[in-house]
Length: 193
Image (cartoon, rainbow, N blue to C red; front, side):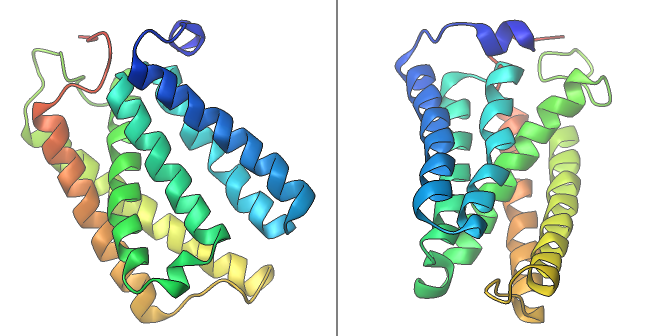
């Protein structure tokens, strides 16, 4: 992971993915100075998700896609797009949960829990099941974080039963779509058996 994280970018997509990481870090600093602590916290919360694809050695396009999706999700909160654009919340939950589930699959393969995409024991059905499971679990945890944030930090966080169920359902569908993608598209730069 260290070798992948420190490897210089070589393609346009890898440079663009690194630019997303820089934007992520700078946005936290800007929010800390000129916005609210809640905005800075939301943006800081996404930093590990921006750094992990580089450490895992994802292909430039996959790394860039994850970075853009994560920044859009966090920025949508900061700019209140979830309330001002009807349905935007569901689109972001679909995309973001899918991106996290796909990245989660690569993490699980690195830990030896599931076969990597280049492994002889890899079967297309495996990421369908694993990504969907990871996505539903991440969705549940995310909704608990939203509930805790509203209950203990600020009432500005929008939480209703219908919103929670819709978010989890679309997150699960996004994770299933990510599993379908992993079944046919390699995500890592260098295949690891």
